[in-house]
Amino acid sequence: MTTSATRSYTDIRQALLDRQELALVDVREEAPFAESHPLFAVNIPLSKLELEVLARIPRKDTPVTVYDNGEGLAQRALERFAALGYVDVKLLEGGLAGWRDAGGELFIDVNVPSKAFGELVEHHRHTPSLAAEEVKALLDAKADVVVLDARRFDEYQTMSIPTGISVPGAELVLRARELAPDPATRIVVNCAGRTRSIIGTQSLVNAGLPNPISALRNGTIGWLLAGQTLDHGQARRFAQVTEDTREIASADARRVADKARVQRASLTELHTWQADTTRTTYLFDVRTPEEFAAGHLPGARSTPGGQLVQETDHFASVRGARIVLADDDGVRANMSASWLAQLGWEVHVLDGLQAAHFSEQGDWDAPGPTPPQVEEIAPETLAQWQAEGGVAVLDFTASANYVKQHIPGAWWTLRADLKNAVAKVPVAERYVLTCGSSRLARLAVDEVHALTGKPVFLLKGGTASWIKAGLALEHGETNLASPRIDRYRRPYEGTEAPREAMQAYLDWEYGLVAQLDRDGTHGFYVI
Image (cartoon, rainbow, N blue to C red; front, side, top):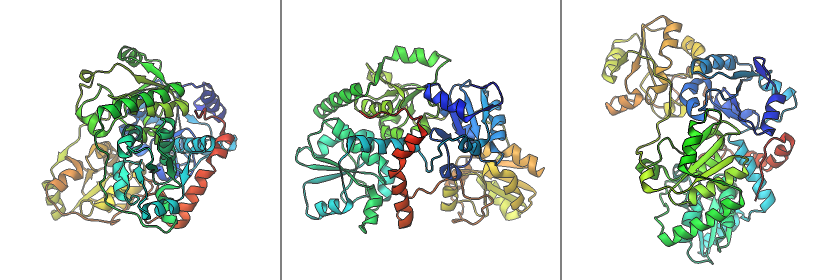
């Protein structure tokens, strides 16, 4: 690596090829990130850097390179990283334009490494698929077919293929035998677009299930483009499996993991790695969130396996790090690990785990900085102040949450855009900050005070406490102090996306294999 205050495209490319640890961090919001970024860039917006980075880049001396596209965010990010104790953070030479001008390949969309890998899998393995019209004909004919939806349950509930059952990706090999016990039953795996249906279908093929297995080509997008109707609000989920099924699935998954060159580890080795300050080790529990909450290994993060494979960059943001996976049956961890290994990660599955090892309970709690001490007020106090006048409410929640419901009169604000946003809000005698929980809003109190010179308060418990108090709510884009760029609108989301956008998205996915070749740093292989 260079010893200057910057790292070049050449430095980072070489580190990727050498499998060295690095984090290339785009600190813009998600929408501009999705418009253009390097393959292995991870998106940690400046707005919420402190709340995300400690879990995503846990080792403080990881070589971190930050960039923006000329907005001035990267320089501010350097100061935030330094304040959090990171010691090897540099700017990308020339920012995003510097990467492009040096010959670096740029990609659009989000979770691109995983999506590009999915296309590579289909390219090499010719993963079987059926067109939407063919699947509908099978369903209309009451054929012996079962449709398994490999997305998260909340995505499945939004829209699903008629008769579809929710079986998130990592659960497929464990659950499919009981959902299709007759080897003659055709299994169709779908997602919204392509990646999770390809990976899900190929998982079942790799595991050796005897059924005819196909992906729904182009997922729910393909279904809509064929002029067919989706269901909404469905709740069909997989059931528990028998011990016999679990044992068969466990043997299948272990065989696939061995073929993918997944490594094995014991708890003793894990503890040694966790104490090693020279390497990053991620510990992920790939079971369902409900199983995780009931009991998990101390220090593990809940990352259901299908989503971990789909969004690896969001959870393991240090390329070249070590990943350790845990479950209690050997199926979910081995299948997830088989894909991560092919995605170029050093991945280990923990063996020899006993029930007593899953000793921590509850949801995963993200590590964060020591929260600054600020003056808090109750929802009832804010309501009274609003009745009296002279108060401005700034809401730092995700824009989608704000549009759904917010405190009447509140201004939606992006923290990274605070200076511009405050200038758009009518001057007030005092300011009250909120977000869903007030964790993010708390970090902005001192900044707002510095910009306004007025007293600034935090709503205790955030907007959630306002809702719990039964106070009035407002809906829609009523007061936007910042542009809604915090989230990229995915073309496969919901049912309102224009046909052109859906088709363009599919065309883009088809082109990813060629883009991977041009980039040349991926290190993927396909078993």
